[in-house]
Length: 221
Image 1: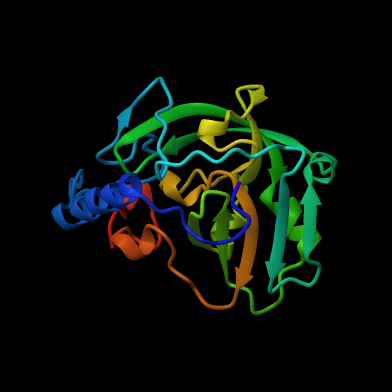
Image 2: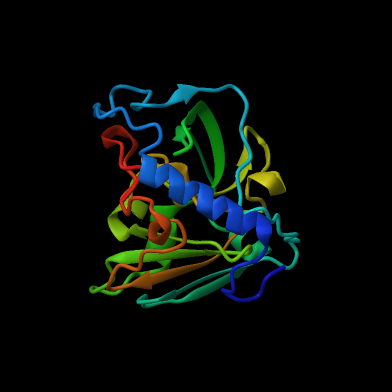
């Protein structure tokens, strides 16, 4: 289990990065069309019934008993929730669709966890906080605007379809931001850092779009 921000290394990850950079150069899956969110399936996507597993080639072993979520940076009340403290927060169950930049979408996912708005109410972002970076146990990072995280359908999920989130899908806790391509929904989240300035992160500096809106095909930067 990683205890720092150092990304994992290895041939698998390097090959994956090169392939994703090639997708960006080639504009893979781009249709040139946009659609309103009322159109449930974004352009260039296909509906699937399974849940494909995508990662950096490393699946960290994260014991919930040792897991901790740190929320820091530009906040008035930094927190470091261990598992019991996290589970003691108000819990919500919400259903949403998810859309992966690799072209698949899965409808009607029931997530249970802590609502992002509750977390924000607890930590109280500073007036100059405008952006967030999520840090994961496999060394992955991804950035979002604070207002995207503050949307009403965003949560930190520990369960999916009524069952604990499996490790390959980001358990014990992952971020879920349904209105963005799913690379923004960090698996194995361990830290949420609040910033004044944007900080493009893992895939954002490797050819992917900074905003990641599926309905306007913001796949690549």
